[in-house]
Image (cartoon, rainbow, N blue to C red):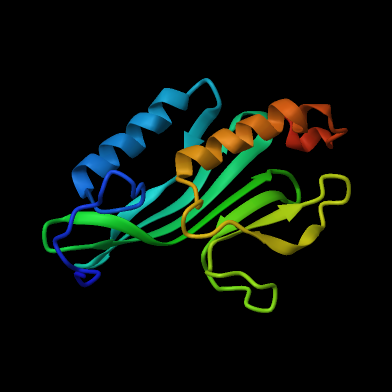
Length: 176
């Protein structure tokens, strides 16, 4: 087994394995461009190296209907300039005078009391009162999503649920 900084490339079955940084960013930007004007309106993401072996993506993706996706993602970088995600938080919500959370995926810590086998989990919120539903749902190492999948989940949430809610007008597509 190689170290976390080793040269081993991801196998076909590892969607979160090592990927060349240039390719990773090309796919990332290509996906956001693909969704532009369909669902994504703008992104305020910032990209940069925290250290030679750490790369960060942070900021907000603004979506139609007042929806947003806050991204806080840290990728480790190996000596071949390949990256893989080691920490992430994808927080979906509705913008307004007070942002409302819809769901959040992260791996900030493990819920051992709840019996989670690892730190990958999903926080859920009740759209009738905007309170968190406890406990967080364990998703595990094998099911944690890519950012693109989480954006698609937010779009599906709007289609299946959000558009039918009686949301305050400040959260909808209103001019300032």
